[in-house]
Length: 483
Image 1 (cartoon, one colour):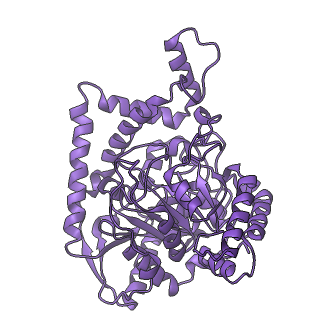
Image 2 (spheres, helix red, strand yellow):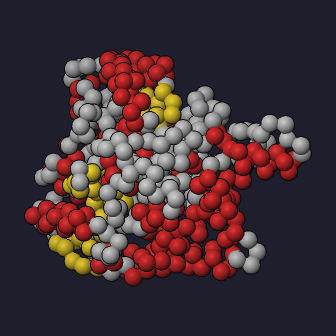
Image 3 (cartoon, rainbow, N blue to C red):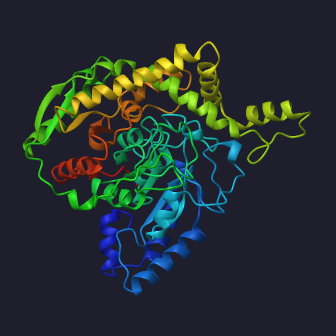
């Protein structure tokens, strides 16, 4: 059962081959057996899962149907779940139980999805390796000595290891697409505003976006269908009709215009990944796509712009964690200042403290214009580059990451080296565009992903291209040894 995709589970439940309760018990036992190797979960919710599974079976017995009705999933541990610890991978929120469900959690629960637990993540979603978690690093099931990517590394590792068919993640600068690439999954960052951020603990509010992680584009379509939609509780949510993503999967790629930016193939890209990217281009050409070289001239400025804007927003968002109202509080504070300093100093990890300091500096008097304002101007130039490119092409294709997964601890002493792993993904967040990573091969036994970008609200186009590619390749079907 653990090898079934979401789509296969939906068919199996509809045909009464097994019940949601049976499937849930199998997967919970598998998590208990195998997750100690991976550390992909922070919290397991066995009682909730079995209750939801029984309810889903009852709904099916009463004639209800639906692709997510009875399907087991997990949530990245920054989606608030009522009465269950929502830690954000941080000591600061180790004791926090959310008093309400995030919109994404509520929507998926209403669709009948079964929540198996909350997955491990980089602390407050800050990281590209899932090593900054208070609960310890997550291991990559393809090689336990390597990182799974971050910050949604727990969700990615759990799905890749077949502990469950799909999970939610969030993407601020590549945190769905990058771990998807490093663990041989399909991961989708929707258009900014497509999925509600209400109840999703914020890192950088103008960049964060929730999305699905699964083994196939078909499964991502099913999960995104349950997540997407307008939410009046979220002021950045966009009131745009949600199409039937599964209905568009089988469209022809004949005449599809694919742009390949020349800037992607710089000295920083592993040449073996470049070869796999071009092999995927050839595969899509066989399906009728037309390929042309394009330019994104301001891409070179993306990393410095992102690492000013994101920490600036983080320094503001994380000011609410002060030891006063909820979360970690230091012992025996002498006064209010001591309470603030020690609660935050003891509750936040090194990477979070680093980004708060960078952000506070960039927003401070005398530096705001020099750094933050300039970064926002660069952001606009990057968006303009994409708008110009999409006048010429339908989608943009390139590598998801410049390198395959690196060894645990290899970049801990050099944060900038880790930041550079996001070079291909952060532009989509800066521009608010949808992006998808799909499996495209292996380097030294480690998975490699190819990234697709599309115009606003064209998630269906990305899923269509990825699905057609997956019908003609088998990279996405490979399973890590031992799982």
